[in-house]
Length: 624
Ligand SMILES: *[C@@H]1O[C@H](CO)[C@@H](O)[C@H](O)[C@H]1NC(C)=O
Ligand SMILES: *[C@@H]1O[C@H](CO)[C@@H](O)[C@H](O)[C@H]1NC(C)=O
Ligand SMILES: *[C@@H]1O[C@H](CO)[C@@H](O)[C@H](O)[C@H]1NC(C)=O
Ligand SMILES: *[C@@H]1O[C@H](CO)[C@@H](O)[C@H](O)[C@H]1NC(C)=O
Ligand SMILES: *[C@@H]1O[C@H](CO)[C@@H](O)[C@H](O)[C@H]1NC(C)=O
Ligand SMILES: *[C@@H]1O[C@H](CO)[C@@H](O)[C@H](O)[C@H]1NC(C)=O
Image 1 (cartoon, rainbow, N blue to C red):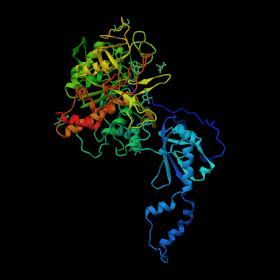
Image 2 (image 1 turned 60 degrees about the vertical axis):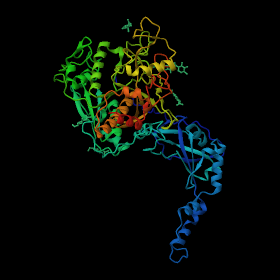
Image 3 (image 1 turned 90 degrees about the horizontal axis):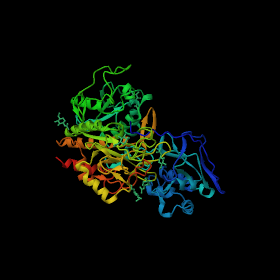
Image 4 (image 1 turned 90 degrees about the vertical axis):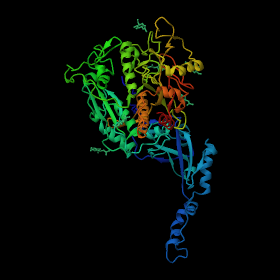
């Protein structure tokens, strides 16, 4: 199961302009040719930066040629006496009448005087206002460009006649403003610049010399990137990343990459399009796992996940026994050589690749999907990776405290017992990795406001940040005091049980299970390029590669000063929660409840919070 929510494609709504224009108003600007890319209304609470361009002084425009002749004609007594910029601005500035008329209209229409600024060159009146306010001011409707939600425009707008004569044009109006390093629309689309502003890091120097052995590892299965999409993404958002930049392929048991653009996978494209702008010129390593037959869910034995990946990076995992299981599980895992048509005919790959220093995984299941022994055997493998210094980041899941609707045993909420017990995610509940929940910049908020836990309700699928308490794994030592503080200060109102035993109980969550997640990062409205189209993606699928990429950069900085990789970072973070931005607003609904609350301190929605890159860097550089 991938944790990326589907690409949101704007529905074709057509034009519905049922608005009546009050008397005394005239059309100020109108599109001569309708723009079919504009049909999704901008939400009313989105804040727009409004600029009213005032007409320049009419008398000045008439006089301008004479003024120029005076200073440029050799016979003129003023020859060579050029004007200063201030003199030019003063002469051409809109008439006082124009400024007063337009300002008075704005104030009368409810835009308070204190909100309005007059530009240095005198030709603009500027203010920020919600879409609702501007629509009522200009008797118009604003739409997103369906190729780029950062772009906003109208088909036409109206002004009172006595105002219209003083106004050149208004933005946003008919023309759409591109927003490459503009972070004013991060509440609508998260670009690489938005992430830099949110987590306080700079774009990497594309010409920096980087370590050869610090490639960021990214796990994929049944979802494959397309190079053409990467190229288009880089050209649009990070032109300093060369066309053709691609991951180092570590193909596992017949995994192939890339694919043609028409077959590009939303998960893979999202992961790399997030990672590259954070880490380039550091490289990425793609662990493309399983042949197409198994990766796409063929055969009865593909409910498991990760075992063939572990086999490939640790040969002993192919054969060792733990928790009553030896090697791969024939009930859950692919079998190689694959006897199916077109299957990978080689033997199971064991120990053929080295694990990278940092690995990002945006895939997972619910704990209830596979037996506890299967999870415990995998968890001990995560422990061994951590022991070797490998840091693993896993998406915490996109279904809040519940599971996927209809996913487990055909129950609606994907929850346990009678669809009422919270359903923790696997492998997140393993204590020896770092799991990452999702935050969002809500409409009208900016990158300077605190983020909140993500929650996007919809009739078919409610997206919220996976969190809760494991039924399989107990609270690890490093998390003990964070969880007891949470229970002490924000005791959830729900009944609970102990030791994962919910059947003979009225409880709905496990009081002594490992808490999920550990940390969080943005996971909504992420700009992507998939299958030749610009779009928006999201999910904790985005959060994991963002966090992993920042840690990969920190490992790079450590290598530069002769220090080593980091392994499990959880103990350090729980001891130093100040290096994260605590998220204190939002919930993660599921199982017919509102889920848990994001609170001060650790919580089972957003963990300890989102990265504060300079603080994290300083802390990890200070460690041996
Ligand atoms: C990237 O390179 C490919 C193949 O060389 C070329 O066809 C394409 O036009 C290039 N794209 C950009 C955005 O430069
Ligand atoms: C989504 O959440 C709402 C409450 O906000 C609930 O009424 C609805 O049933 C949920 N939908 C799904 C598919 O779980
Ligand atoms: C979350 O906070 C709200 C508002 O303070 C409170 O009513 C609710 O009970 C809290 N939820 C839980 C699970 O404690
Ligand atoms: C709870 O009961 C269900 C149905 O009998 C069973 O499948 C499940 O394993 C039980 N869970 C636990 C934790 O005992
Ligand atoms: C990277 O490689 C160098 C030389 O091969 C080695 O000394 C160093 O320990 C490696 N660093 C990491 C973080 O793997
Ligand atoms: C708190 O989160 C909710 C979504 O759960 C969001 O609508 C609201 O704007 C947030 N409030 C603040 C103050 O960030």
